[in-house]
Length: 285
Image (cartoon, rainbow, N blue to C red; front, side):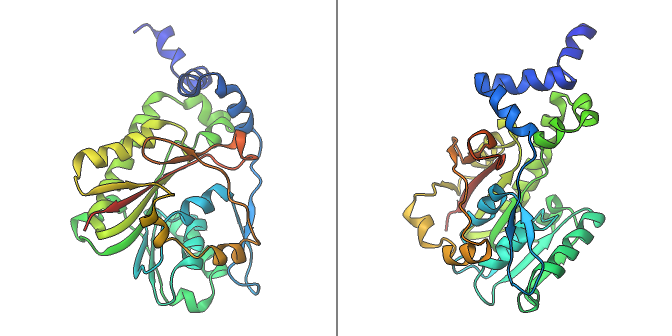
């Protein structure tokens, strides 16, 4: 391939071309929404503690993990800690929550967020760890009945708003991250108990990091079942909506767009919230 053609696939030009191919005519309005600063919303577990601010789409992704009856919960890629706060606020009394982060620096930030925003009584059931979640399956198996995997991703909103990262962008970034995401998802699946629920989530726009990663799970494991938010089985073990309304001051969660294996929240139609992709998956008994 000529150098001119290679350059066209990289940087801002390549970025726009890639996502215009994904979203078609919608890309211009979606890009405009991504360039605007997202408005975070308050989330507070206890009036005596500090309020945490995060994207309402992130709250929705964590909220989509059905926690009713869960005893052992894992947030596999937990930093900076917003989704851990949501899980902590919704899980049953006495349930145990493990929040893991592979980066020591980010793990320290996660620890500080949990210390400042989670009541002491709940912290007693919280364990924070620091290791590579993709390797957990080498030493553990079927030990959690609920798992949230908010995987590292392209984070296109961040890329678009940072010239340094935009100039460095190439399709190889998406491919590299999708490989990393699959390693994490396949590990998480082996850690999930039979009958358990897993939510795979990213803040990516690219299908290669979203539906296509989940699709690999269904091709490799015949005990995976994707769930719709409307499924009765899902509703029966859904979180207590009263709790989330209390914690977030009656927050209105954003609308979702159905994909083949999950849901997408996109900022051009949600007042700036997102992007967030999530898929709810159950391991058969």
